[in-house]
Image (cartoon, rainbow, N blue to C red; front, side, top):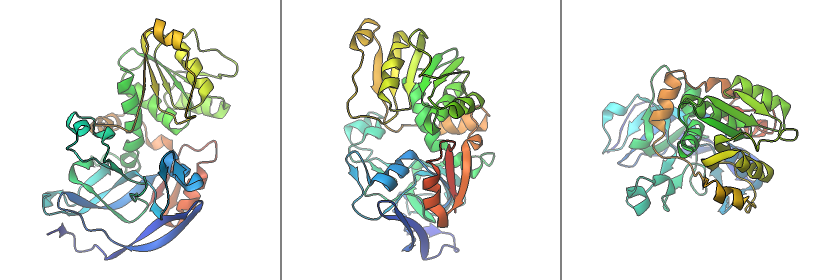
Length: 343
C-alpha cells in the first residue's frame, strides 16, 4: 500500500528525447513508488553535459539511446507519496535526489563502492528515464532531505557538486592544498568550489577561453592560466584534476604535480591518451579516474548551507518544461554554466 497526498494526478507531463536532436512533450502515467521508494514532485532540474551528449549524439560510449528517453538527473523536489516500507512522516519533505539505484548486495556495494555497482540503474542513462517530468521515484535513502535555507536550484545542483567533491576526495584535498584544475566549464568551476570548501589555499585553473578564465576568478579560482601561452610544468601542485578531457591538458597537467601527488581524471575525452610514464614513475604519482560519487550528499549539503560553496551563482539560464530543448541548446553558448528547468 502507498501513502500519498490527495492532490496527485493520474497523469503527468514528460519531456522526452524521441530521437537524436528531437525533444517532445508527452503525457505519461504518474509512477507508483515501490515498497522502498518515495514519489517526488520535481521542482528543479539542472542540465548536465551528459544530457547534451545523448540529445546531440544519441549515445555516450556503450550507452546508446535506442528508445524514447527522459533526460535530466540533477534534481530537487518534494516527497508526495511513499511506498509501504517507508515512513509516512517523509511526505512533505524537500529533498535532493541522488539519481542512482545500486543493487546494494554485490561485492562493490558491500565494500562501500556502490557507484561501481555492475547492476546500477542511473537516471537518464539508457534505458532508465530521468527527471524532465513532473514526478519521479527513487529509493528512500537516495532522497536526501535538505534544509529550507537551500533553494530548489541549490538542492538540484548538489548532484554536480557531488562530482567535484568526489574528485577532491580522490585528490586528498585539504586545508592548505595546492590544486591545478584544467577546464573552467561547469564541472571545473564546481570542482574549484568544492576544493575551496575543503580548504585548498591555491586553486589554479587553466582554460583556453579568456571569458571562462575571468569567470573562474569570481567563482573559486585563486589564479588562472592560458595554457596556450603559459606552462604549468613548474607549478609543483599537490593535485591535478582534469575536467576538460583534452589530451594536451592531461599530459601537461601531470607534469605540474609534485612527487607523491595525485592526478584525477574527471573529463571525458579520447578513448586513449598517451601519458608521460617516466614522470608518473619517478614521482610516484597516483593516477585515477572518477565515476560518479559515493556518500557525498551530506557533505555537499553542509558545504552549501555553511556558505562554503555558491551554487546559485552557477545558474546562467532558466527554462520551463515546455522548453527543455532550448535548455539543452543553451549549453552550446560558451558563456553558459548551468541552465536549469523549473517544473
